Length: 151
Image 1 (tube, helix red, strand yellow):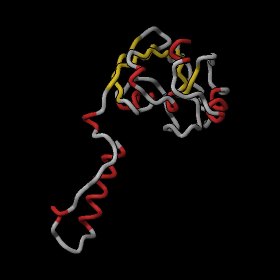
Image 2 (cartoon, one colour):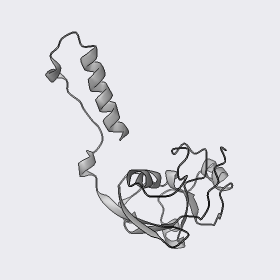
Image 3 (cartoon, one colour):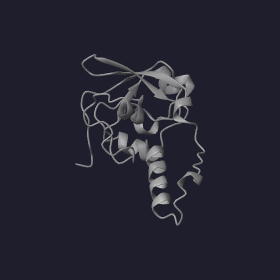
Image 4 (tube, one colour):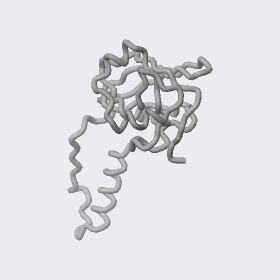
C-alpha cells in the first residue's frame, strides 16, 4: 500500500515540477517483488469466542499487515501501526508454531508484551512476526482483551 502511494506521489510531483510536458518519458523502478507475484499463505485467527477467521497473507508481510489488509474484525488491534509502542497486536501461538518462528522476540517487544493481558510463554506481537512460506496454515489465538498502554 505504501509502495503504491509513493509511486503515485512520485509521478504527481515529477509531472508537476517537470520543465517539459513530456510525461511519458518518466520511468519508475522498483526493487520489490510486484504485489501480484508475491506468494500468499493462509493464516487463521481464532478469537476468544471461538470464531475463526481464515485469511491470506503475502510472504514478507507482518501479521499486523494481514489483519489490516484483510479487514479482520479485531477491535483495537495494531493501534500503534506497528511502531512497537503498544501491545494491542498481542497473539498467542501454539508451542510448535512458536518454536518454529524465524526470529526471537527483542527486548523492546518483550517489554511491550509484559503489559499485555493474557500473556503466555508463547505470546508475540503480530507486528513483529514476518510471514514465511513455512507458516502456511498458521493458527494463532487472539486474546479476549487488549491493553493499549498508550492510553
